[in-house]
Length: 349
Image (tube, rainbow, N blue to C red; front, top):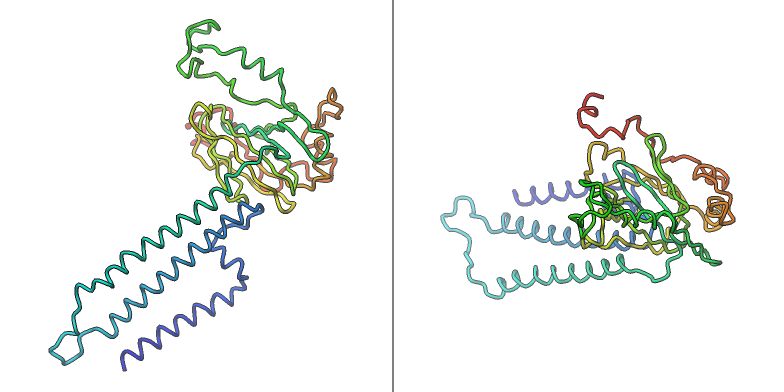
């Protein structure tokens, strides 16, 4: 009688849980994402699928273990008014072998699919359509277009003059002498920034303006990451992929390059720094604006310097010219003087 009452209560609780899930109006896709944001790239979808199947496998294992525990509690307990204990079993070799082998097989299967998805996410094409230089600094972002190939002629956006000027000035900051002894970091000074890339078309964030990175849908995009000071992190939640942004990444044994095969739909997506990088880390936001390939081609032509046959417009002017909002629409600038890095100022505001 008691056992039947317990089973009925268990069934009622399960029914109420299912009913609550249905009444919330969540679609099956939302439920199976288990809290993950909706991705906008094929890589994001593959990672979401890995997450979904991993959680489902964990739930199946959990339900199996709960069922075994409840079965043991209900049907193998000492009967009331009976002096005898239930039949005891020990040293069941086949069962113990199963307990040992099953977790091992589960780990191997999970490891296999993790490696498959990881290899897909980290895959790189030799000829991406757009190469973007991303530079993080305290506490904002600089975006530049290294190369752009939208099916026609390839635009080389590297600013060779700026890069050569930077590379020709490594120095030891303590002496101030350009011909001083080699600095402490691979022969250069701690303030050397010659590893950074500079481009003719750049968007630089400020305290008053959130930087908007304009990208085309349906094209492979490569990101080349570097920091000019401390470690930052480039994170767009809809990409479902965070990458550290290191100072002098190659000399720090890190791969600063990753690609996405395409952005699948147009829209505006907030980007964040996901690495604690100092006083105003929480304010280091940016926006990815995904537009059609036609709009992106027009945008690049509008932003090209006049000497390259473009109009030399600013980022905001070019966005407005192609019918987009000239300012970020997913996040807003913060009224903070980010040039002052003292913690006491932030605490007093």
